[in-house]
Length: 187
Image (tube, rainbow, N blue to C red):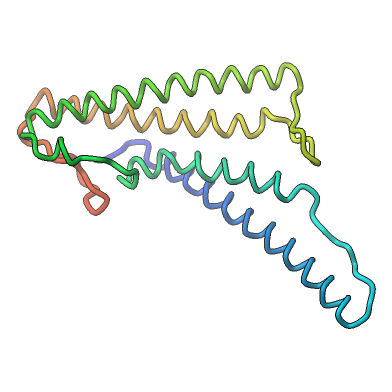
């Protein structure tokens, strides 16, 4: 499939990558600080006691960002797990309509999730909710990342649905499922 908003999905993937790099950097720094303290104690000196407060909390929020920001990118590049054991045996003309039905269901779920997340972020902003950890991060910040991520996924699902409907109505017998090694249009 060719997606018109692929640059947006790639931007989400870059955001996911930045989140993963930040997790690695935070954990590496924390481990390095502990190793330095252990070495200082080993040679008979006082430890420095340097640590990053709230590393676990930051890593958890970054992991959520990494997971959700990559949703649309992995979808458009056919990296999500799909169980096609049954529908792969159907003729193309029927299989395309199953694809349309599955995309409609996925889009409905994504839109419902997005609507709920928007309400949650709005409520967190209204009541100035903060996390209960050491850092007191305003909850609307990670929730906004979730809203953006689910919005990108919904946009990707809409694009895929339009393409699948176009094939289903014009030439359903030409439908074939795209795979991770085949990024061409679904026919």
